[in-house]
Image 1 (tube, helix red, strand yellow):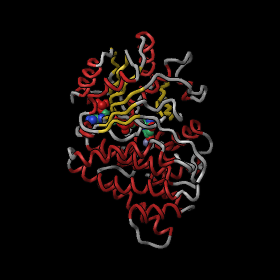
Image 2 (image 1 turned 60 degrees about the vertical axis):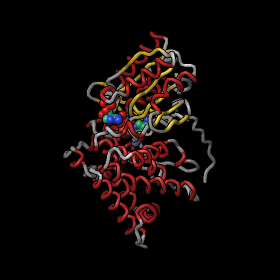
Image 3 (image 1 turned 135 degrees about the vertical axis):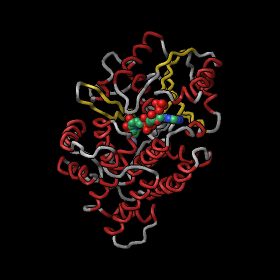
Image 4 (image 1 turned 180 degrees about the vertical axis):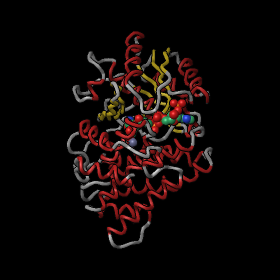
Length: 391
Ligand code: NZQ
Ligand code: ZN
């Protein structure tokens, strides 16, 4: 195991009705005047936004609103939010939604105290050191942004969308995250399933490592993956199964708050490869991962089947003794699982029958470097092969 520092200071408030404590949580942080950020309408339709506003008002907190944040969020609303915060003397940002809303809220929070353009942080030209505090009311277990220090934004510049994941250790971790499993009952099945693929991918990006002697985080990761695989069919069959929703919701946070990655090198090539798909075709991130992750594993199994075989045996109870055969069986099990919850596992099933692989590979390496990934370094010829394996 490698040395590490782990600090995950987010306060989690989990359970039915907990969104009504958002005012008290915000007041405890000293917020007086907040920006409430939300998405395209689900939080309005469900009445959640009204409950959040009532709770803030009840705690004596004033607020401005920025709604309409779309999936795969872009820079425009971030700039608007920064202006609103500066003009309105805002002292905290509350995200009511999923990864797209939370990541927009984080980008706004980072941009407010910075004198330059917020994109400098995503372009690697500035180091994130200060941000307004962010609180979260989560509505979809998926991206794990409620517990991560990351924010993923797409820069719309002409015809070229540049989707970048900004990673910070602490600066962008939310101060609090409210998780009420009941809020996820209204999710469309495809969003529930895509969220499940995303959280599994967050664990697997950390699981597939070259670091030796990491049995504790291997076992934690395998345990969460097994629980997700058990609970997933329950939430798909019965969207208002509170206990199954609760287990899936907490899995999404544990998958990405860093605990599974302690003491080990991480990979993240599949995420980089997927981000080019959602940047170009605006597909749902988790569905893109259901297509790419098995392709990445198939590529890797040619060179390093051992850890993929371990995954197959421990997560899917594959009995095969030969590593290469076990890895192949594990990948088939993963694809079958994704298919069973209604997810695509090929580009065609994703609705992109003829992907522009050359463009995605070019942008991937322009945006993320000539070599990507930790499990086995990947160059353009390798990432081209992975995209092709997903056809
Ligand atoms: O906009 P509304 O109307 O709210 O609808 C949303 C949206 O259409 C809907 N939805 C959310 N909660 C709902 C609901 N519909 C009904 N009932 C509810 N309770 O779901 C759709 C997807 O929402 P979105 O926020 O886009 O989902 P997700 O959490 O999957 O976020 C995806 C974004 O997060 C990024 C992805 O790349 C993508 O841009 N990621 C962020 C990460 C991070 N910050 O750490 C890590 C991830 O790997 C990921 O890259
Ligand atoms: Zn993800």
